Length: 123
Image (cartoon, rainbow, N blue to C red):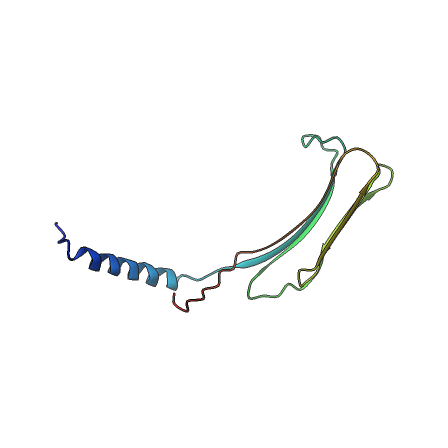
């Protein structure tokens, strides 16, 4: 079947319109996640099981509210380290860490959203 060159732009418009129609009919799922991670590795070797760590996270749909703060903490005065971190319900955060011996200390906060806001008001 041959398509006349004059009909090609019309077919492209129809294909584009159908694509938008299908994408507009699909349900949208978006989430917000908050995560706190604290970890101490005394010998910089991830393969040994001597790491000490703690973590906490919460994940909700963007239409929902984050209903609790998250907190993680590790503390071992004998090994010479402590670390903690927290994230509140509105995204306010704090981290702290202290070590007096060699090793790697990590306090990490991740706050992410995969929400997409369509400002054009069309699907």
